[in-house]
Each structure stands twice: as structure tokens, then as C-alpha cells.
Image 1 (cartoon, one colour):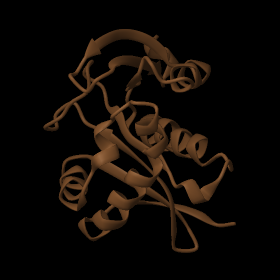
Image 2 (cartoon, helix red, strand yellow):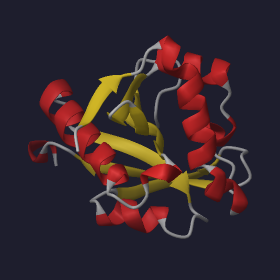
Image 3 (cartoon, helix red, strand yellow):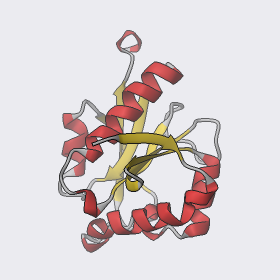
Amino acid sequence: MTQTFRLAQAADAPALADLLRQAYVSNTELGIHFAAAHADVEAAKKHISNNVCYLLEEHGQLLGTISLRMPWGPNPGPSGVPHIGWLAVSPTAGKKGVGSRLLDFIEQDIARDQLKCPALTLGTAVEHPWLPQLYANRGYEKFAETDLGLGHITAYFKKIIIESFR
């Protein structure tokens, strides 16, 4: 089982849009309407262009994606550090730890080892039945809530990546 990460390119936009729509169906069914759930090819191209977007593949099959919105980009996160966005796992990947692998990669390989950034943030719906607890179990601490006009309350979480910054 050889899984590889790579940066997404504009040509990946159709596959990325399909993955996002498939992966976010369960959220939409819960009444949680994340923007990624409705991404079309143009939105995916814009996302790839404006963010650091990684794809995880296995034998040419797209297993998942994760992105970082940078503080200096057009859609920065809430606290001046890179912000995780558009985390999605293909429903065909099953429960094989792909989401954890994506988070480990972005936290350790990219944020800590390459960018040397002290922390990361992410956001999720307060109303989601398991995501807030999942992020808390991974060491993310909730620091704010806001209404972004998406029909749910967004909780922002932060994780210290380099302990000397605590």
C-alpha cells in the first residue's frame, strides 16, 4: 500500500471538486453546509491557486485532500497562523485512517518540519456530532465561536505544533 502526497495542480480541480462533494454529503445530510460541500470545478481551481492544497493518492486513486489557508492569502484563518481547510476523505477509502494520515502530514511534515510554524487553526460546526471532539482528542483547543452565515455556528480550534511556543 503506497500512499503518496503531492501538491494539487489546476488540472486536479475536477477530481478535487468531485471528492469534496462526495466526502461532504454526510455533513449536508446533518444540515451542516460547509462551503466545500458545494465546490464546483471553478471553486476548486481557485482554492488550489490561493492555498497550499495537498492530495493523498494510492495507485492513482484520490484518497483525500487537506489544505492550508495562509495568513497572507486572500482567505486567512482567524489568528495569524496557517488554517486547515477542505479536509476530505473519499467515501471509497473506508475507515482506514486516511483522515488521521492527512492531519499528521499537515501538522508534522508541513507545519512543523517545513514551515516551522508554531501553531495551526481549523474550524468546524459546533453542531457536528463528532468533529469537535475528534479535534479536541488530537490536541486542538477551542478558542472562539462565530456565525459565518452558513446556517451553523463555527468553532475555531488551535493546536500548538512547536511546544517551545506554548
